[in-house]
Image 1 (cartoon, each protein chain N blue to C red):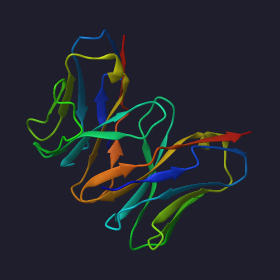
Image 2 (cartoon, chains in turn blue, red):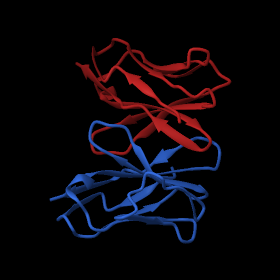
Image 3 (tube, chains in turn cyan, red):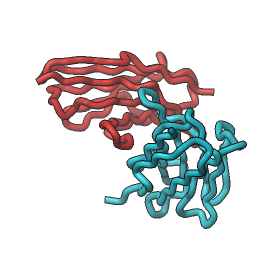
Length: 113
Length: 110
C-alpha cells in the first residue's frame, strides 16, 4: 500500500539551530500539505502545495519557516532558527487533486531544547 | 472560514459498549467529511469518510452519519475493543482545504 514517507521521525535540537524535514507523498498526488500538530490539538495547516506551486502559506511563520517542492514531488520544510515554541509534530499529507481523500505520513516529532 | 467543533474531548467506555463522537461545521460549502484515528506517536489514519450527498456510511464496526441541514456529523463505533483506544479527529473539506476538529481521546477499558 502506498504511503507518505517522512524523515526524520524524531529530531532534538537546541534553540537557534536549523532543522529540516523531508516528505515524499504518494505517487501521483499533486497536492501536498504540511501541518503542525501540538500535543492534544488537531493539525494546523502551515503550507499547501499544488504541484510545485504554493497555494496557501498564510499560516506559515515566514520569518523562520520555509518550504519548497521544487519538482512537484517531494518537499522540504525548514525552520531557522528553531525556537522553544516550535516543539511539535510536523505532519506531511498528500491527496489527489480535488478528491478530498487526505493521507498522512507518520510525522516528524521535533523537540527544541 | 470553516469552523469545526468536536465533542467530547475525552470519552471512556467499557469494552463492548458503543462510542459516539460528534462534530459540527459552519460552512455549508463543505462537501466531504473524513474521520481520522491517531495512535500515540503516529500520524492520523483515515478510517472512514462521507460525502455530502450521502446520509450514512458503514464499514464493519464503524459508521458515520451526516445531517447537512443541521451541519453536524457523527462517528459511531460499536462493540468497542481496547485497540480502538486512540485520538479521533473529524474534518470538513471545501475548496481544497481541510479543517480539523480538536480531537477526542477514546479510552476503551477491558
